[in-house]
Image (cartoon, rainbow, N blue to C red; front, side):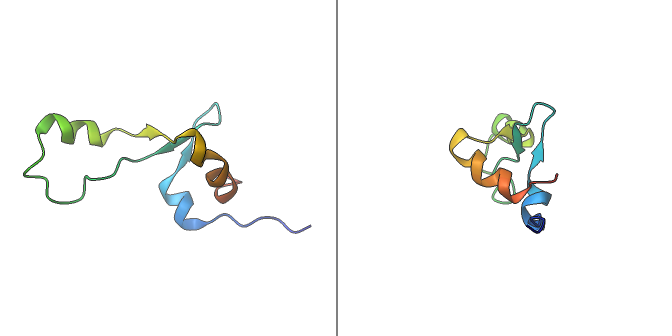
Length: 65
């Protein structure tokens, strides 16, 4: 059976932690920032862990990362 290919778009967006969880960036930080509070923008800088329901699909996309 041939190797699976890594989806490059997914590999650029997601990272694996040391324990195998998947890290993602937060949305809503690209534009229209004037209306958002400093506190909210500061929280958007930090990454988040992917929800349990999406992990299985994402693991297949970044199998070798």
